[in-house]
Image 1 (cartoon, rainbow, N blue to C red):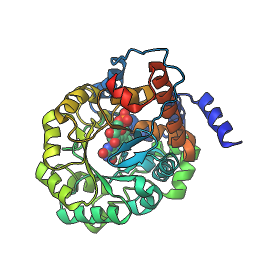
Image 2: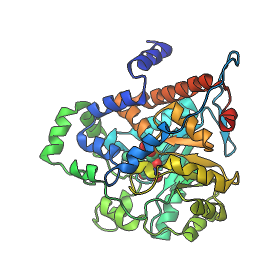
Image 3: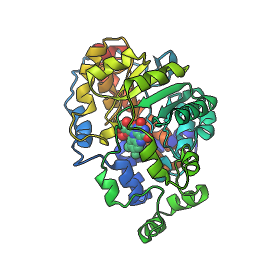
Image 4: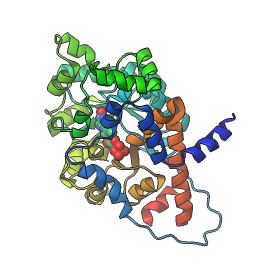
Length: 383
Ligand SMILES: Cc1cc2nc3c(=O)[nH]c(=O)nc-3n(C[C@H](O)[C@H](O)[C@H](O)COP(=O)(O)O)c2cc1C
């Protein structure tokens, strides 16, 4: 089947991200699906993230002739084919073995950025050469400065020039849905896991080929520190130590761009500017950390107004459609990231699954631009 035929077939069979989510759920063990989907607490914030988009409305204009929307953009001095990219997702291989590699390949094909998490299941050395200059590296800050330097050096040597420091994990959060599903790290072989493996053969065969998911970037340090499990190592040694001084030290060490991810308060946005951040990522970690705050989208305008053009703004948390992308840009974001949507794609369709996510989101964004009567991303901001 030609590329175009295959694309059209998929667009008819899975026209929306929600269709990919259904398919992904059927192919993943429950423990993986629960880890991907979980929010924190009662999951109010997770739901608010999605609901908030419904409250934003924009009024279309008509009789604008034939419109050919252009969604190419330049962000922080680099051109991309679309104003969206792939958010960092940890424990990625639990959801689909070697998902990081597929995501990096998609990023190359579509010319969009792809972010590798510190706690991904593949290393910067493996993924960096595939992502090339589209790779962003996400840092969870180790308590020990030496370890931090080692990880940063490894990322830089692997080709990552853009660093994303995630600041919204002062401590691991309670993710009840994931607990109920029995997730442990590293995964323990229990009768339940064996049964889930038998009933999800594609995931299981791929997992057996690659080996059980491990936090491969950091696991060597956990072993070095003597048999401490990787999960305990991450909990004990990473995060919980962040201050603006720490962020500034990393900012000064890192030769490329530094984005600060997880900003929700205008005064924290001000701190980002003070330390010289090159970008501010408004995000609530997809509803996974603190159940008591507003959706990320509701908080975006106050940060846009505080920053007032002094620093580019990235947005994530809750984007599932091209229209959602449009709305985030309309509220002042310069660029957006999607987390779960890309993982649904890979888990549902494998190697080219994230390509299909790009097709859905880009197609929907362009179509909605036409419906609104505009053809450029700049116009979205002035509506
Ligand atoms: C399963 C999962 C794992 C995640 N792991 C990380 C991570 O390792 N580092 C990070 O900065 N953010 C992480 N995030 C948050 C995402 O980068 C992003 O902020 C979030 O997924 C956006 O919300 P969305 O899933 O609604 O698009 C994770 C999110 C999910 C769903």
